[in-house]
Image (cartoon, rainbow, N blue to C red; front, top):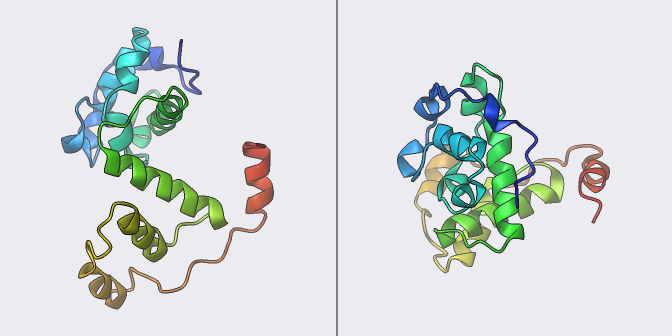
Length: 165
């Protein structure tokens, strides 16, 4: 079954700029341009079973660097969604839990409250005090906020249009 993508992977001419700019490429089993190559060859199942789609940070560095303006981040999102739909297990369970927790936190107000998200994530993986020593340092540097950010105006209506279920 072919993966329905918003982008056309056949447009990728394998320059690898996406892969060389990726900040998490060291954690991936295949690089972003290799995923695009698999998709252009029609080998979707292999792409769905990589840890690459789960390690993608969603930072859009790859999309910005792409000379063909392919939104590779969107492709990774589509692949993750398809993997979940097909019941393909994430090769690194903590990454799936982080991803699910991030989406849940984002869906609350359209923005992520890092303190809450990381607290919930740490509880989900059974390590409630993981990285706890970073909290005070981040707070003092203004990088961690005690209260959640304000919700984006009209976010709930926008989400219902996007995902009506």
